[in-house]
Length: 294
Image (spheres, rainbow, N blue to C red):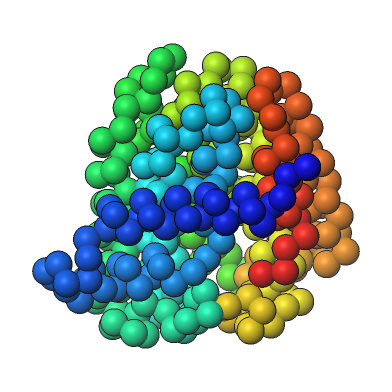
């Protein structure tokens, strides 16, 4: 039986080591920029996206080495989105991962540029990585670009901001969730599978899994924002209601949100039953996301 804590610790250490080796040091000019980049990326966090990437590679081929650069590219891009989301022009948050946000510590201009630099680094790393057959060599860059762009994370953030204070709309809310959060989680497992050379049916299975856990993860975020505390979350709580966000809780209520997370978790695990490798890590990760407290 998988020991999730040991599994997460092992992969987190690999991710931390790779990030530390690839991101310029704090004394590398321009020092303030690199300090801000490292402050944000090493502030904590679950490392969920890179871990999903490595877990997907593991279930497909066993060897996770080809997925390391894609994994840390996902984390760099995710951190850039957090830095920018926290800015006064966006969600105006002062706490992230239990620490003051990047713009609070380094100023808005440096925070913007730190996010830009992490985004650029993500694609620099992917430019050094070729996908194996049956994929085009640049498939990993394409996956991340599609997940992050106007039809993915960025588009979801725009829709999220525009929906503030608007009447509840289930279809619109789910579209925002699938873009803003789901797209990058879906890309995480797809990129792991691609890096490991997954056959197309196996990639389809990983895609279905990623879509389900991506939506479940964001619904769980909605639940925790409503029910938890800033101390537990490491970021501001109860902000969704304050800002009039269009969340699953706002549209359907807490009980329905919890039922939907449970159903999506079951569907995610069902989606990968056809894979030949051990699906236990992905299954346990899906279950843990559905019962998390932060």
